[in-house]
View 1 (spheres, rainbow, N blue to C red):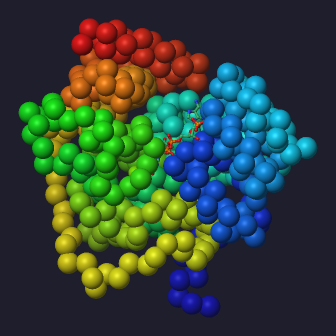
View 2: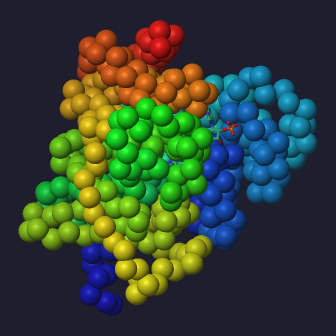
View 3: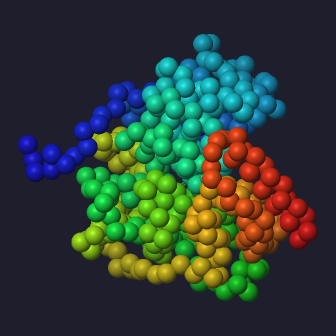
Length: 397
Ligand code: NDP
Ligand code: MG
């Protein structure tokens, strides 16, 4: 018996935990597979899903002995390499294949590392089926939090986003009513400190050189515009049942503090650690246990530079637009997210400038009337309509 025993979480998960990884070929997906490789005694990869990376899929399915794989892009569902899947490995194809995969009886846990709104139906299906959900796919929480969160049982959904994992860890053993506010940390991105005039000239290649994290292309651009932080404010709002204004963005350039929670008595708990996504991924999978670290430990005696600052919401307007969408609520975050997905891709393809991302998002939001979120079908309609409006604005640039 030690003095902490009574406050430590009691829930435990089956071991080995039978895991499916949606978005297995991406940045979070491959790091999840790395964690599974290191802890193969406790984690069994039973399913893998990609959009089109079929060569990767076949290689990973053979390595992990997966019993099911999915390819959502119908064009790639006929790729010749798929014939090399082991006998007995089921192949699912098309948009609904993610939902089919997550509800299978041989699945305990779903890691959703799909990028964008495209992940929402699978997240919803996983929660409905009572599966543990390790959620990296922040866009679908931002858009559909009103539908998803009422389905969540305690301990069922563990965030993978590093800030939200940090907040979750600070909250273990605490009472929700004792939370005063959340400090959501932010590296500031590659364009930290730049003026609007300078931002008007930056390119996608500049943005893709992120100072701290190696991530997929969409989130890398979102980090540069600070839309990522805006999405994270709304993600925290849904996950932790706090208002948008109870989430304070704090620039912490060194990315050493992954986020903090301030309680009613003024005490602040912060979560620190190496900047490596395998840590929050592993925490989600090991919860309520902790397993040996996959990365080098930090020598805090060697750190002399440790700074805090305010995010510049005037220069980086996407952050304030996301907060506005969160305050208006209902379907507004859906419209905002759809516009951002279109504008983010357009910027990556040099179809528009950096500041146009924010202009497109604002224009679509101004063109939208928020309605209460009622169903997945409604969100798909708002998403499609907002994408069409965003494309129209883009064509006029
Ligand atoms: P990547 O672009 O690296 O990977 C995306 C993955 O999703 C790929 O496996 C891709 O398959 C798959 N995918 C894309 N579209 C679809 C679709 N329509 N249906 C099914 N699968 C699809 O993204 P990241 O790993 O960077 O990000 C994934 C999610 O995690 C995002 O929501 C992001 O915001 C979040 N996140 C990421 C972090 C990071 O460090 N990367 C940190 C915190 C959160 P294919 O290869 O076949 O295209
Ligand atoms: Mg994050």
